[in-house]
Amino acid sequence: MILSETDVATRVVRWQASHGRNHLPWQQTRDPYRVWLSEIMLQQTQVSTVLGYYARFLERFPDVRALAAAPQDDVMALWSGLGYYSRARNLHHCAQTVVSEHGGIFPRSAQVLATLPGIGRSTAGAIAAFCFAERTPILDANVRRVLTRVLGFDADLALAKNERTLWAHAQALLPSVNIEAAMPRYTQGLMDLGASLCMPRNPACPQCPLQTLCVAHREGEPEKYPVRTRKLKRRSEAWWLLVLQDAAGRVWLARRPAAGIWAGLYCVPVFPLRSDLSAFLDHLGPDSAQSIQEGAPFLHVLTHRDLHLHPVIVRYGGDATPGDGGGWFTAEQIGALGLPAPVRKLLAGL
Image (tube, rainbow, N blue to C red; front, side, top):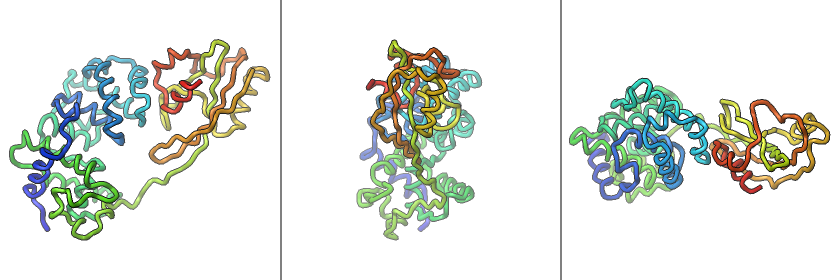
């Protein structure tokens, strides 16, 4: 079956108006700053989680100039717990670029938006479609799943040429009439279908407006789409977390490296082995650890990695500085820093 934009777009737009999500705060505006902020936060994060962060960010940084002018530590602190922290660093860098290179005004085309830090082609398309009704496609994970199923597109998306072909199909299916109203609703509709009906497992095909057009449904194998042969494998790691407290109850924290897990965040010292942690304490001095308490280990799950975290709480009585580039922080000061969510929770329980 050869699908036309009339077949797909008309059904998606009609369905979104009556069954899609229309109440979310970023849907009540065409301000590109607010839409951009929501799109970055929603990457690999549930709507229910984003809502609170979105409101707090807008209260603290009401526009792109306020965000650009803020210290990065303030941005990271407000992002703490939302995960995927490179998003926050790119968010801040992007705001500064919009101010310095575009006069504080977001570009109106997806092509230019995609040149900004942290904005890929799909996010750029979403901003351009929602805010400026540009006739441009998106291909986030949900939309990719919807379109590959509807089209029966079984080419391996691990290959760049096949990804480009799918982008071309997505472009061809865009609305071509009443663009000002249709593009935002069509874009949102595809997202909503992927989030509510066209799920990775057990899709609700009987409720889908595209069911009669969908090749995957007709084949009876919707879950085989999309096809991607190269997949990241999960790994497990054990990390030992050294919680050093001085006599005043302050905790030693240092910034993590600029790359890797929890990059750029403040954190307690991390060791791959318990023996490495012990060696570090010995290096500080034989009498530096006035007391040592082994905390209960706990699991922190990342997208492709399971971190088995083992906290060790040490009352520090030595004179040596525990490390370079760190410092002693009170509970109040810690509250204003960007920390990984499990470390913040650990410290809050001390």
